[in-house]
Each structure stands twice: as structure tokens, then as C-alpha cells.
Image (tube, rainbow, N blue to C red; front, side):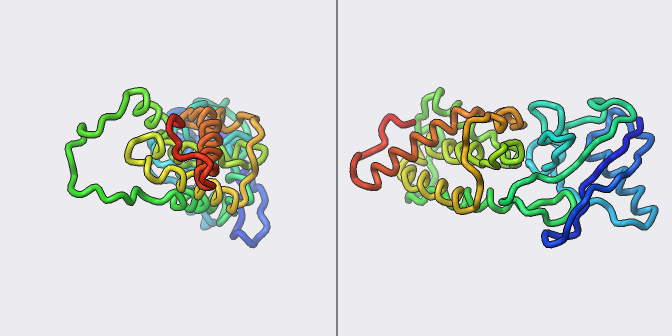
Length: 258
């Protein structure tokens, strides 16, 4: 297979960027998209040209590092998959492919296809850690968790923090990510003591980072490689309302919010 690639090149966050055209031949249909970029970079190095910078780590759809917009879609045309899980057989032989980084003010481009997603880390950090002193470790099964609650928490914890929800949203909203990270902690017994503080702190940090607001386009859910449901956003909004009321002393607890 052969492809014409239009790849965004940018030396730094302060430099202007532009698309550059490259031809790649002898591409196996079984290659992943990142392996195809490896082939291109090997070709560029042989020609003594600067290789294309792009993020990657596990290449197994787990780490969320491979943040690329391919032909206008976050992670490319394959649903429920990251870029590293996208294979070249999904494209037609001879097809033109446009590759660019996430586009959001809160994700400044560092170089080429690499953007700074530190804002996601700061939102998680704002949620803090479980600080309750529990003494020595106890048997894991000693804390009973209803199966429906544990399943729901696991659904939220499936988020890999790739940022595709931000890249796909026309408002560059990060509410799906924030909701998933908040809810998987607040649903479980260990997260109850600080659930109000966590909800307020994470939303405040989300707003401070400069992300847009959610207006229910649902593009985030469609682009999410782990198929995180936008129901978590509704749950987060309810959680925030209860936390604000509790902070003002208008309710005693958030019982029943889980």
C-alpha cells in the first residue's frame, strides 16, 4: 500500500505550523498507524531530515498517549480504538491522510504532533488523594461494595485520559474526562469522606485550565476509545450541586447521590 500524508509540522508552541506532504510506499495493511509513522521517520532519517515528533508509549490502547487527529477524527476512523490500534487496512490504497495534533487552547502544541496535556494531570491532582487514616491494610473483601456500584466505578475508571473527548468537542470541553475521574473515586466507599471537596476542586480546576463548556453535542462519547458514557457528566453535575449545597451547610450529606 502507498499513501500521501499531510502532516502538521511545528517547531515549538511559539512557532507557526503548517502541513507538510510526504509519500510512503510499501506499507503493510497489517501495520498500525504508528508503525506507518515509524516507517516514515526512518525514511526521513535516511534522507537526513528531521523526523516527525509524535507521542506513543504502550501501543496497546492502554496509556492514552497516541493523541492524533486523523482525517478530522480523534484517533482516526475506527470506533472504540486508539490511534495505535488503528491499522492501515482501514484506509484505501493510495488514499490521502491528514494528520494533526489535538486542537484546544488548553493543549498547546509542543512540537509537530505532540501537545501538552498536563491540564488533565492537574485536574486529577485537584481531586487529591484519599487522606483518611485507615491503619494497616485489611482484607480487601472486608469493605463490601454492591456489584452495581463497583461495575459503575469500573466503567468510569476505564478512562485512559487520552483527551480525545476534548479534541472531538466543538467547545473543547473536558467534562467527560473530569466526570469519569471524579465518579470512579466518589462512587466507592473509600472516596466518600472527601467526595464534596473533590467534586468542587476538580470542577474549579477544569474551569481554570480554560476548557470550554459542555453543550451536549455528544461528540466526546462518540470519539472516546473506551466508550465512556456521557451519563457520567450528568452525574457529575448532580454531584457538584450537592457538594455546593453541603459546603454552604444547606444539606448534611450527599446520601443517595451515588
